[in-house]
Amino acid sequence: MTDDGALRDFGAFSAEIGNEYFTSIEKVSPDGHTVTGQFHSETWGNFRTFFRFVPDESGKFRQLDIGQA
Image 1 (tube, helix red, strand yellow):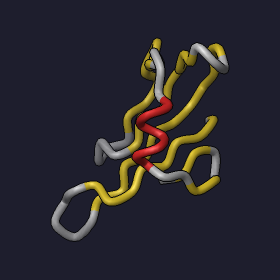
Image 2 (image 1 turned 180 degrees about the vertical axis):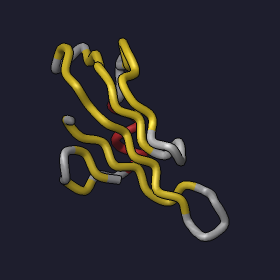
Image 3 (image 1 turned 90 degrees about the horizontal axis):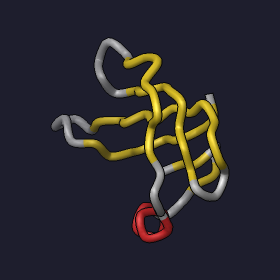
Image 4 (image 1 turned 180 degrees about the horizontal axis):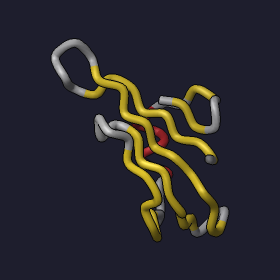
């Protein structure tokens, strides 16, 4: 996975997640793989972000990219 373009270990990233969530969804890509909206983090406050899920050949997600939008 990547977080603002930096490679991250998904297991470590998952363990660090606190009470973080989208406060509003602005856009979902037609394929449903990218979500953009306002996000809240107890550490970083409120900001606009995207989550992009990249599927493999079988349709399972192999990559997650998160970043400020």
